[in-house]
Image (cartoon, rainbow, N blue to C red; front, side, top):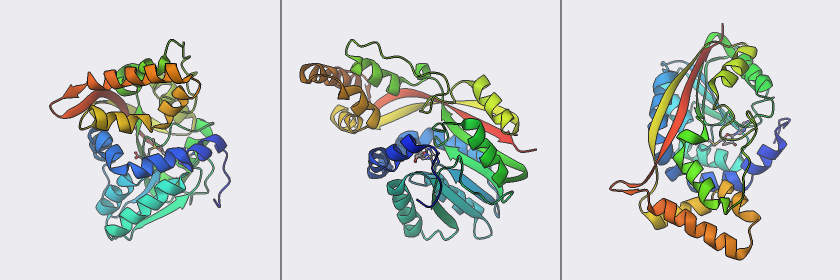
Length: 282
Ligand SMILES: C[S@@+](CC[C@H](N)C(=O)[O-])C[C@H]1O[C@@H](n2cnc3c(N)ncnc32)[C@H](O)[C@@H]1O
């Protein structure tokens, strides 16, 4: 990686096993997140000719959608920590013949963006992993022109996110699992609106707004399919890591039962809730 990396643990995870898993299961992640994705793209309101920065682009669906809309007169710079996901994103962009996306591996908290070069900075769940969010959003703001926009999706708290909450409950196996401290890097780091508004304001943004996106979260066609997907995920592996074999088997049975209880005519569906956060650089 050419860049300096300050989020070292996150880089190890995303440029390692987490990133491999997301790249391997790209279609499923994109399908599962799809309903939230549409609201993000609507909020981003990209116009032809615009220059877009996609932060934590992962497998790059947002980058490809942005590049198509920005058209040949516009461009996308897509930045991510994860080599495996960037490789997937580059391949998909190439398959589609999109020549106006540049992918760069780096840490968005410190990546040297061209100052004032972008009309829009966007992210689909790629901005909750910064050790120093004020520094990271200040760096992102520096890439925007005056009047430039920020549009991003972040998860609401665990209470609105049945999938992650249910997995955690099923795998607790009698343990009292402490909730991460507010703001700790992870899926729920920007769940609290006041916390996030303060961070964005300190980073120089104005007009910070939040729209709630509450959507079905379809994790698989049937219980076996969803279970196979779930057990490979990094948070599930962490929760299982300290358990002895008997407790692990019991916890996995609990997970299977939770998944089976969410069978609907459309597949295995949980509830999920995210914020579409918008802001502007003055
Ligand atoms: C939950 S995934 C979302 C990926 C993609 N945006 C999507 O919606 O499919 C989080 C992404 O953020 C990236 N990421 C996390 N911290 C980052 C950082 N400091 N700089 C750049 N990318 C980061 C990860 O590598 C990963 O690709």
